[in-house]
Amino acid sequence: MKYLLSNKFKKPGWLLFIIGSIAGIYLQLQGFESDQMRTSVISLFHYDSFEKEKNGIIRIIKNDILDELIIILIIIGGLLISFSKEKIEDEFIAKTRLDSLAWSIIVNYSLLLLLTIFIYDMKYFHVLIYNMFTPLLIFIVRFHYVIYKNNRS
Amino acid sequence: MKNKIKIERAIHDFTQADLAEKIGVSRQTINAMEKNKYVPSTVLALKIAKLFGKPVEEIFFLDSDD
Image (cartoon, rainbow over all chains, first blue to last red; front, side):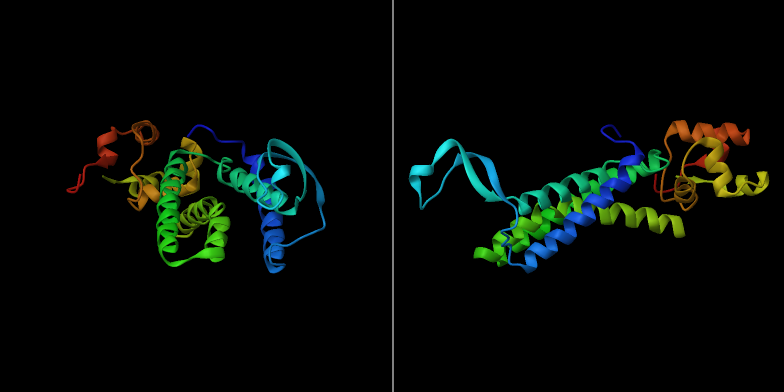
């Protein structure tokens, strides 16, 4: 399979992913509110329904960047875990990788369909937040489970 | 497709790890082939046949499902 990184990126991937996940759980326990990392950021297509005079294509605004940092950590970590080669990357591993990718997309969107029908309002917003990470998470769990199971039997 | 990799391995007294190393794949791949969970590529089948010194169809053969 093309697009794979060297195996040495896998461990740093786990590190970023775990740090991001723990910080994410912490932020969720705080009710997604944090005021520790307020800084100036570039906001494209800025729209504020309360202060319309601040709207514009490119604006500098104040924002707490903890949630952005957590998203970046989890996504980069997850991509590194998912797309770094195994120690021995051969055709069976490649097939398992592709099967697991298809499996995770099917499971992820089936769940999303179900939750779209049954979850509303702010709870659905939370579903969308988790859905940013679940395709990678489901893939990582399934891929490693299949390899682990094959290793034992 | 079925295969006689396990039998050939016993004849040559190779472990799964030995065979994996000799043909440059992971041990999981050998295990998956022996359990008929994975059909190898033609290249891999030819490598295995060459290592055991037999024609490929003496090690790999079609199953009734194929």
